[in-house]
Length: 86
Image 1 (cartoon, helix red, strand yellow):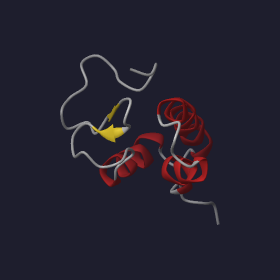
Image 2 (cartoon, rainbow, N blue to C red; image 1 turned 180 degrees about the horizontal axis):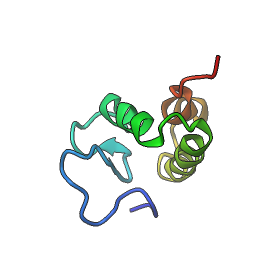
Image 3 (tube, helix red, strand yellow; image 1 turned 30 degrees about the horizontal axis):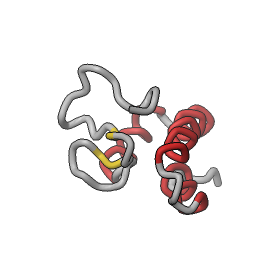
Image 4 (tube, helix red, strand yellow; image 1 turned 90 degrees about the vertical axis):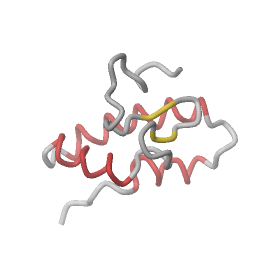
């Protein structure tokens, strides 16, 4: 397990990542899945900076676990979906 990826007591519907594969523990899709993305946007309330910091730390951990994955695809997966400011 990568530090910070899984938390004790995570609910089954929380869409938390499972490591080392970084898939969603609820739906099995690549994490962050569509459901988790929506929840993260709501949780961070439009604070792109804090959301980026959180997902950046997840990206750093995932690059350790997914060493053969192309870095740009991981960057797109973890950070590329965050809405840009107008």
